[in-house]
Image (cartoon, rainbow, N blue to C red):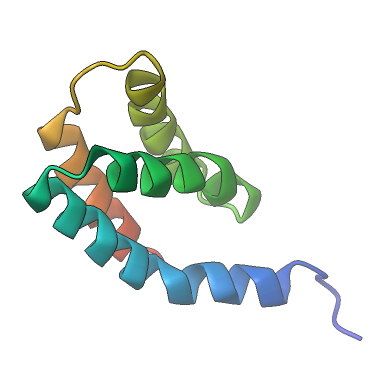
Amino acid sequence: MTGDPLEALRRRFVERAKTEADSLERALLQGDRSEMERVVHGFAGAAGVFGYQALSEQAAVLDGQFARRDPPDEDRLRDLVSAIRAVG
């Protein structure tokens, strides 16, 4: 038995980060708000659990904008794509 019960989940999170970064970038290019919101919301919640607090906070700001139905902040979204790609 390993010492960290979250390790397998953390590895899966890291593996999925690139795919999710690609999804977010594609959604941004296509103007797909629902996909942007899905990816952002997922990172706002999950990133902090796995030790990526800054990424979680960055996503949470955007998640709040989506919740208020504000227009997506494209610069922040691009920054988030870069931050997600840096995971792992």
